[in-house]
Structure formats: C-alpha cells, structure tokens
Length: 320
Image 1 (cartoon, rainbow, N blue to C red):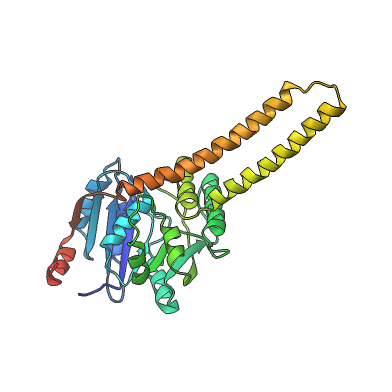
Image 2 (image 1 turned 120 degrees about the vertical axis):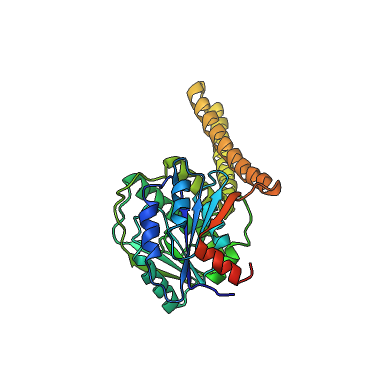
C-alpha cells in the first residue's frame, strides 16, 4: 500500500466562500512523497457541500469528501476525517484561511525533522475577536490543570500528527471526542512551531460562546474526575462551615436574647442550596454522558463519502 507523506484534514462548516481558495492553494503544494486532502462537510447550512463536490472535479491531488448526516461539531468532524486519512503525517486545519496554506509544508518539515509525535502551532499575534481569545485562554488554562498539559503549550487546531498518534486517537469511539485531550492521553512527544495567523476576511467565526462552553465541558467532564473531587472537598468545607455556624447559634442562644433574623437564615439556605444544585448538575452531566456512551450515541454518521479521480485510481491500484 502506497502511503502519502501527508494527509490534510479540514472540517468544513458554512465555508462555501473560503474553501475554494484554501483547497486550490493546497492542491498547488509540492509535497515530497505526495499528499492528499480530506474534506469533512459537518452539516453545513449553506452550499458548502455543492462547492466541495464541484472542487473534486478540479483537484489534481487525491481528495476525499466525507458528508456527515448532520452537524456533529468540529472535533467529531476531525475524527471522521482522521478515519479516512492515510498519510504518514496528518495536518488538521480550519477552513477560514486564517492559517496560510503556505505554512503546511513548513509544519510538515518541522514534524519530520524533529521526530515529534505531534507538533502544535502557535501565534505571536492572534487575529481572533477578544471574546474568542479569552475563551481559548480559559480552555487552555483548564487543560493545563485538568489534562496535565505541558505549561506554555497552546492547543491550536492547526497541528501535525504522526500516523502513530492518529491510530491511537481512532481507538476512541465515544460520542464526545476532544482531540487535544486524546492526544495528551497518548503522548508527551510534542513540539511547537510559530506560524502566521491572518485576519479573517471571509464570513465570521463559527465558534460562539455556547460552543466554547460545550468545549469547556468536554475538557472538564470527558477527561478528568477532578471536578468530582473538588465537589467532595467543597462538601467537606461547607460541612465545616455548617458546624461552625451551629456552634455560633448555640453560643448566641446561651448568652444573648437577641432573636436570630430571617436574613441570615435565608442567606445560608440559598448558599447551601445553590452549591447542592451545582454538584448535582455536575454529577448529572457525568451520568448523562456515561448513559449516552453506553447506549451507543454515534460519534459521527457519514451520509456520503466521495473522492476525485486521482483518489479513485489510487484506491483501485491498492485493491481497496
């Protein structure tokens, strides 16, 4: 079986205006050992699917288009693309042209030269909105403390993975994949490379505050039991506060005739009730995800898988 040097996996969502330029640039790259492109249409609501289908007829390099049955999310779409990637290295990148395609070859060469399992990119200056940068920093902060992420490592979606790491990632079949969490679970051979980050000139970011909250939940709930331990410690701490409060009430009843007010009682009840609801909600989130995993909620569902002529010929030669 002939293995290309590189597979480029791109999750596509509502990017009909940007994906042609990106794919054309990748098609024009000269990669020693050859490369292929894997596009994953993640339930786009615009005509991204039709645009990607039209691109298949113009591509010179082998190109595969995976059309998911609905929107599953970026990390699920990346996992679907990894399943179709055959390269000795795999680069994942966004569809918004903020990562210059010209950096792909430099990233691949750095990964080959360093021998690292994974090479993450980072930016001297990020061209994202303030709230998006803030959300990214918070997600990285959580990953550093919950996933044992190396200090200072920026978890970028523009990354290069070895075939070994891809194989390990694909062992995970749960419905809530977090690619960076899976990477940190299987290797510490990780490098960094500074790349350029361009302003977004077409469309707007598909990451909303709600999506960032979901990403945070994936980090916190899927790959760590630390929140449950914190909830236990919080329970002990509040029990200690409750004992102190009980002692104070007894002493006040013995030495003072001042009636205890409803305000202090209401504050105590509200505080404890709020903490209880938070802890119960956290436990419920864990149980809900366990239930959905046990009942076989799919990580992704592909409606169609298409390829261009170059990819079809290669599959025929390999007897696939």
